[in-house]
Structures are given as C-alpha cells and as structure tokens.
Image 1 (cartoon, helix red, strand yellow):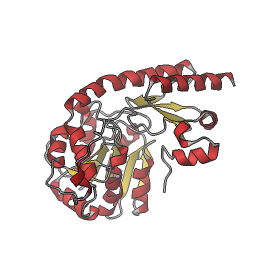
Image 2: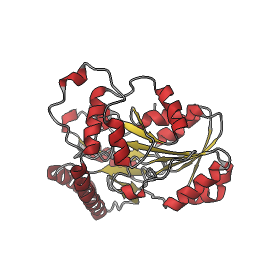
Image 3: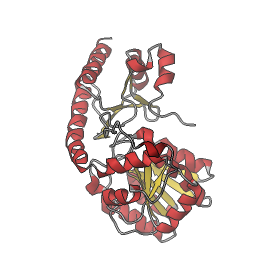
Length: 329
C-alpha cells in the first residue's frame, strides 16, 4: 500500500498533536467542498443501491458525455484497468499520482516514467499511455490536439490512452469527455477534488461501452452506497455552486502561490487546488511545519512539497505564521 496525503491520525501520534488541531494541506481536496445537506432521505440507509436512480443521467449532463460508469472513486478504476490487458508496455508521464504506476506494475506490466517531450518521440514503443491532466503534482497541462495525436498513434495497434482528469473540473472546456466515444480513449473523473467529497468514494469512467461493461463486471454489484449515489447526484446538479467555485478557486490558488513565494518557496507548478514546490529542503520544511500542526505533502523524487488550499482566513493566517517561523529558524 502506498502512502498518500491525509493520514492525520498517524501524524498526530508521531508529533503528539491531537487530530483536531491539525491544518491538513496535504491532499489537494477543495477545503470548502459542496455542502452536503443535513437531511438525507432516511430510506437510503435501508435500500440497496439502484443503477436506475438519477446518478448516471446527472453525470452524463455534467460531463457532457454519452457513455459513463460510476465507480467507487477513480481509484477503483485505476486498480481494475491493468487487469483488463495482457502484459504490455505502459508509459506514464512523471512525476505523477503513484497509484497508476503501482497498479500496472502489480498486474505484471512494464511501466516507464517519461516527461511529455520524451513521449512525443517514443510513443510508438508503448501500448498504454497514462496522462494526469492537469498533472498531480506538477500541474502540467496538455493541449487537446496533442492528446488526440497520441491516441491516434496508439489506436493503430489497439492501445489505450488513459486521461485522469481528477483535477480538471475548474476548466471543463479542457476535458476530453464531451468528444465522441471511441475505442482506446479512457477518461477518469472524481468527485473527491473539486467537489471536496473524497469521503463518498464516487468516481466515473468515460469510455466505449464495451470496456465499461468489463469494468462493471470487475466492480461487482453495488460498488457505491445508496447515500453516496444520492449525494453525488445532488452535487453534480448544483450549477450555481459549480460556477461560484470555478470563480474563487483560481483566486485562492494564486493567493497561495504568492504567499509561498513571499517566503522563498515559489511554486514550480500547480493548479487551482494545490501548489507544488520543488526544493532540496523539502523534508526539513515538511518536518518543521508538522511540528506546528500543519501537514503538507512530501515527495521524494524529485524532492518537493505540495500545498493544498487553506479553508478559512484563520487557516491562511496560521500557514503564514508557520512560514514566518520557519524563515526565522
């Protein structure tokens, strides 16, 4: 099992700081996510999940696609997809969300980490290409035509291009989801980041119906709880909240970039939900912030830190105070 952001209880034990006293900036999850209603229909707790509810229709409308499958978080699809191909060569743009590499390797595939310019030159050497758009953690984005060119090359030998769009909700115009369905293009979406609903464990796969059927069979019956399906349906339908969030999140991301730069930690990349700082001093900064109850995400290769957005003015002030103390130490 790989380590990821969060894990507040583990850090609470390590640093002797109660879980409630931490400021968790480690996950890239919207800290002011979609407001789940306090009143949830009581019958959802006693009824098995039903595929005929509103979820799929709401998802088709939100993602502007024709064929879509809800899964138990996009992580479920990340684990299933490698099992649907015989051993092959897989390219993943690096650095990247490590579960992609891990799951393909665990399934017996050869995985090669590349930078995007290298993939342009070497794409004919691979059967599967995995792109996170925008990339997590670097924030790199990709021109639509470039992605489609890669897809066309792989389609010639029954290959796949997997585009993980977990952080793309803020700029939906960049999504490949509305394109006509075609073999070999697999798009992953998540309610955990933009919507801030990581706890409901709802994600989606958008691809050709033949492949969706295989993923559904691997997922088994009832992969998503009734309550999670209901919450997801409501969130996807809330257009006013979508519009408001798309306005303020980029502003907050710029504020975070400016704050980090003020304390000599200028971001090397990022998106509207996090900033990524490459620095050889990353382990020391991570440790010193953790001593003050502030958790950011530490990366080893390359040495870097990822900072998510603070939720409130009090949290912004707390982060700035901790950065000041670090600079003075």
